[in-house]
Length: 474
Image 1 (tube, one colour):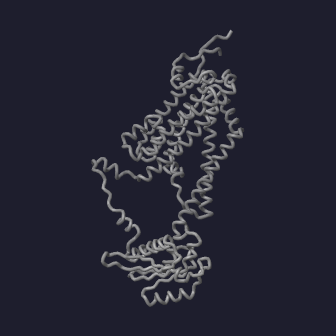
Image 2 (cartoon, helix red, strand yellow):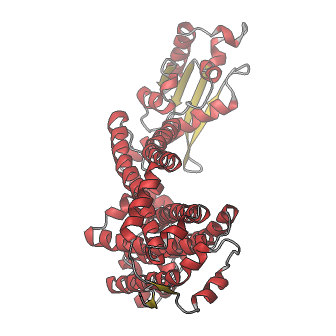
């Protein structure tokens, strides 16, 4: 007769079978396949769509009258610039300034009153007024005269736009034309004065004064190679990547666990499979599913972005959804970041699995997901903005203490603010947390997954874990 002995609740017996079964079910399920395809396609086309929209915006900004309707454009038949300054301005400069929409507009640049009268006469004889503007509209009513003069008293230049009393040109259109010509005029005078755009930027930027600091703080500041923009970009990208990874995992794991619990399959499976192996197999299956989405989406995104740039010559930089920064810091950094990501995934996934098994009915899923997601979102939000405001000591502490270390450690390490030894310590602590959660899960998972008459809260789960390990006949 077989003896009775204590069950090894930490055994992973049956892990492979659970993993294969759950993975097969997920990739065969229509709902999971639709979710996978949707997310992958979203990642593929997000980059090109952002490129196209960004370039459309850039094109609109570069062309002075792109955002004006046809009536505004038709209302301008001519632009005559009277340049009374020493700055050379050509007809081509004016044409470039006002954009392609006014390519058929009569444009001239004069230096004195005599040449202005000649150009005015030429304009009146060569243009015809569009009938849509009305019968009483004359050619002069569709003309803009721009006067460039020197204000010697104030040591500056003046740009004035003049139209006829009965002009059909709107004030908004006139202002747009004057702004464009003013920008071009400024560029020309800087160029002719031998002043580069960088020199202008330095002059206009002024002087920034930092707070008083110690010599150590000063050395740390000048040795920091990351600008505030770079710090925010890396923090944003890493936090966003982690939020997407963890949020998807939490939802799928809780759902998978609850589906199995509601179908009563767990009672049969637990006869031959240990509790820890059961939840571990599901976590690894979901990880396979999630990482399949990330890999396919990332590779497809790189290809679609490259094709879009090559075919349409688009150079718009998508800073906040470009995760390539993770792979731009060298192989050691990539390896460390991936290990940290896996630890983070396991921490939140085991937590989600425990909370999912504590559900009593399908309606409880939302509540369980919300508990884990709240922790995830709060930590991500702090990690997204923390590097810009926290000092090194606070960042170091947050990079070592879970769950904040799940986000802060990879970010600070990528920024060069966390030594490799501190990163290794952070990973070791995360591994210990994973082990502790796994032990907790092993002790309570069987009871939680088989319970259908009581919903356990987190403190109930802790109390349950303190009880003696179950004993069964093997």
